[in-house]
Image (cartoon, rainbow, N blue to C red; front, top):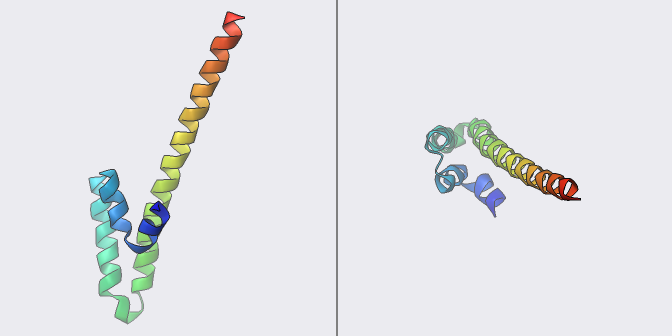
Length: 83
């Protein structure tokens, strides 16, 4: 679902996550894309806005995965110390 939000309305992704600075930056890129769509360069701004949101989503996923791995490692350390 988040990928669809990122592709079609990328500023909404940052609004949902309450990342205000990124929301403002992405909104500017998205508005530039909408405003210059007729001139053919709007696609470039749209790609920048989608790339920015996609990069952030990927980074959040990596942090979540790293925290999960660290938690599992701590559990394993606790089990091996008890035995």
